[in-house]
Length: 152
Image 1 (cartoon, rainbow, N blue to C red):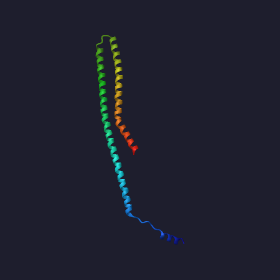
Image 2: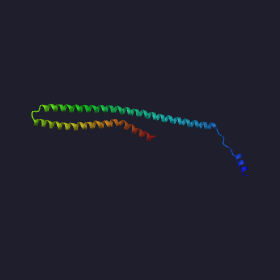
Image 3: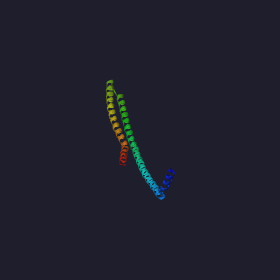
Image 4: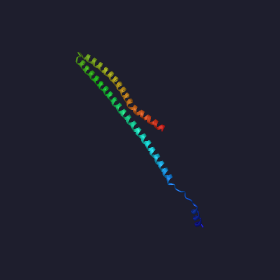
């Protein structure tokens, strides 16, 4: 009895027809969509790489300029310190008494301390500006990237 029912059931079952043209159209549409998405991703990647390159070039150029400024400040400070040292040495050689030597030495040390404090303030100002100038392009690019990510 079960064999007869199975045979009847199989005879009464209709299988859906397969239309290859519809499947081809769907595969083509899927492939075209994938290609389009790949082009968009490549375009975004290319744009991001170009922007990153510009930021790096700007950062390196700024670092070069800032480094040059800092080097010039250092050279100026060293020159001023050397000139002050030679002037002090000349004054010491021309001293007539021990009390004059002590007075010259005390005045020299006081001026050197004041000068060192002033030079340290100048170096700190230049270094702070340098750090800000060098980090500004990177910070701006990072903020822009975060904004673009949030927008997407």
